[in-house]
Image 1: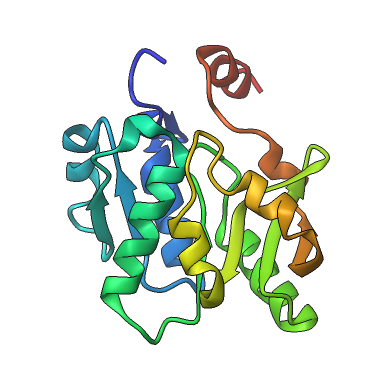
Image 2: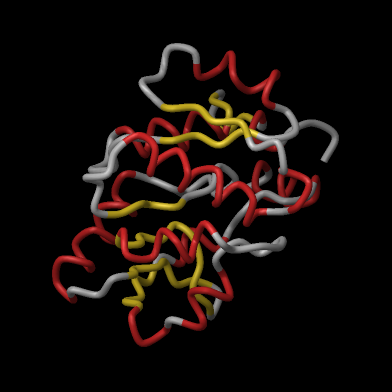
Length: 180
């Protein structure tokens, strides 16, 4: 990408702001935003948002390092939190409605993990009960929690959210999305 993808505008709003607003409009609280390589460019966009911002100095390691930073921030914030929602900024269809569907599935199934399902696999956004925080904080690698979800399939409820299959990872993705 020529610039940080979190700054790509959809409907005149940067993806990071859209994701934060969707999270804030949901049952998720507190909202933690993990910033990496482009923190200095992104942080000003969040100055008026009621979120906890943490910087991930190990961002070059991959997505798991951001997950670790977010979980560490939640653990520091409160010992009473019962779970965490993990989401990313590059899914333009991410919404408070998607979060509500995940929360409803967790309540209905009692499963300790609930994940969006699209493109034939489980992914983000995902909900994890607190009992998984230590394992999430120990993850390494580029893929974040994808392998964790696969390894814990018996504990995971899937929610079909096909609209979230679209993520903006390349200039071609952005061009295709904007031409729709």
